[in-house]
Image (tube, rainbow, N blue to C red; front, top):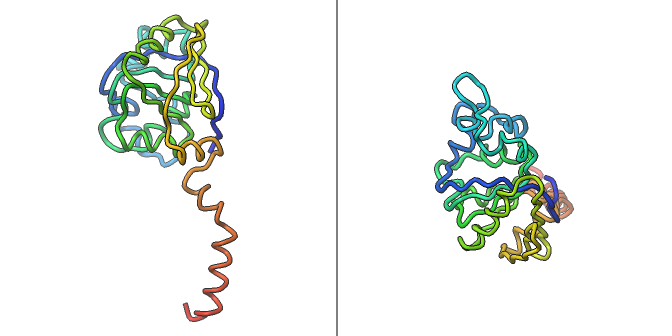
Length: 201
């Protein structure tokens, strides 16, 4: 998993509430178990019309937001089914951070396991960043996970809270497998001892 430390990027404004996981990645794209390749279908039903043509008014289709790495959205982001394909699609598109007033619990936790930083802030602070994001590609937002700060393009600094364990994992690029591998020496030692004491197993 990619490490997350600092990020300076374009923020795309998406002032919608209750963006669910089916909106993020529709169910017809859940056949794969690969984490890559889903970015082209992110927000598919909003990004494209029935003929597969881009919808010009959708934020991520606008030239100034095609390279967005941050998404500023409304409350209850990631609600709906618990599909892990949702953060896979977001990450594969190139978005490393989602800022919203609130998140669905399962989606929130899945983000950390897939190298994405979800930041929950009071609505008034999200409004500040939403307005900043509306300036387009000239407005870059800076995120410092270690310092737990967001700096707007105008220099306004907003602090955010994050669980210390999740922060550690994200800064060190540790998903569940990575955490297990940190204990590889202890696991090997246990297996060797167990093999000698219970050779019949």
